[in-house]
Image (cartoon, rainbow over all chains, first blue to last red; front, side, top):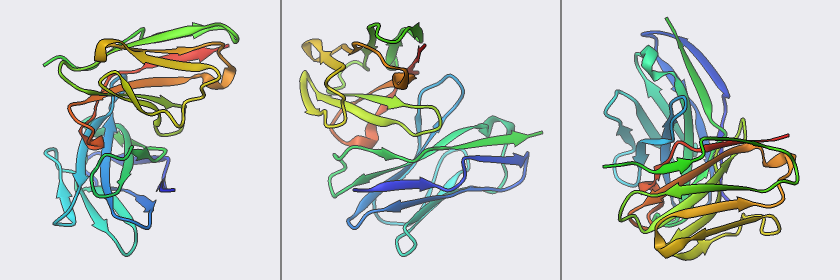
Length: 115
Length: 114
């Protein structure tokens, strides 16, 4: 069965500093990979996704993630964070070719941006 | 476009009591999901509906949890009787198709069992 490991449960970072949230997955077959963000008292929102093609994917608010098949990783990065990026971030995987298989989530990483 | 609605937002009950959660998905979304998110963990799928039929309920503790989706629209999730370990946030999500990554999540119901 597939699993997702988020290596850091909490990441504090100063405003305008770069950040990397790490995610590794285990699966022997093709996967689709996702990052979701959960702001306080809100539901999860899809931040970005890797389905196929270019291994580097970007979101509209400056985050990017790179799919590395050899290292089974999908780390999330942002070169300069803002206070508004404070949230919990979840990495997720869907196994197979159709995208119909259920999402399996990691435990989440709480990003705290310090002014 | 209105999002996924859930109620109540918070609920506190004693163990062995019963509780029900309600979800109203985005209009026209055929697929509905219920997740359990225990503190410090990621969401775990409990049940997936396609219209009013169950697609996947392999992780639903059927001895105490039940769910239904009336007329393929609203859904209720019930726990009877509740245990302390059921304390969690219960998330509802809906999708226009069975593609898992097209889900839109509601704000969740935070359940505390004392």
